[in-house]
Length: 425
Image (cartoon, rainbow, N blue to C red; front, top):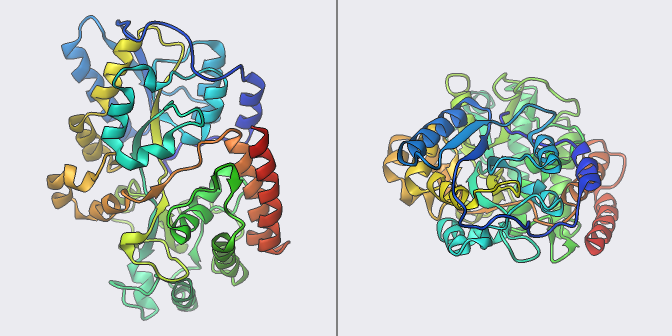
């Protein structure tokens, strides 16, 4: 998949490098001149980045942007953390993981966007209520919500039809319906597995198995809220037991598949966002439905994981006035429309479907994701975010995937550790 994600080692590196944190002191917010930006290295985002830079530079000869792809490394987050430590981060990075914001903030590496007189009003005006999830514990915004890939369930219509299931309306809304349906699909050899999320132990893997269903089951709760773990309650137990059943019955695999299990026909379903539409085109005759809930909530009430990447301004930036203007230019309605057109990813704008009606009329496959984009849940913006996620993943892997402990007990133990981490932050 084309997500750029951190490794568990990031937590150690950033903690060691952390300074006093908080708002980064530095140049006047009105300073203008040339700036540098980084963007993601996938082809579609590179194409968008190049046209955005060219459009700005054509009108601002005295404030030009120099741009490049994020330098290669174990992960973009490690590269960014190292650049903060070295004091040579660019002004803007259009690929900042929300999970890393608290650590970058702790390093003193980020400029609060509230520094700018219209910072809060622009950010909240563009993104609406969803912006609240991206506010840091000090009440400031160190990231601009930029784009999301709300994850849903893709399913292989041919695999379902082979099992005698109506591929236009498969019964997948409740956990019981979902399990009954996928048992038929696997029994009919529509695919070896019903679904095959990565069973490995990296902290971020829970964003693509447990977390979307937890968001749906709770009506939009995050993993941690008000300094307390939320995942050990009734909703978290139901989600964990659902996945435990899939693994216990070999409907989900315990060994990692190195390719794309859905595209290769090894799994009948996948949890993924709209970026995958172009990847699966011509390879799979697919349909898409929201993630299931125990009671079968209607689609209009389903929340899911955002899989967002955001824009942040870094404290090494001298010409912050220009950087702020560029950030607003790059996230304007016009540029967001070009980003949507080139990548199929959802700009984090209020009611994105209404903002770009012509695009969605011409590309109806994306309309479902635009509707879902209004109901997304982000990773909690808390200190020690990555350590918290790893603590959860360790318990989940041990109990849900490999069955070495009762899932409820494992989640309770993990919740106590997470509560302790949250209290020490």
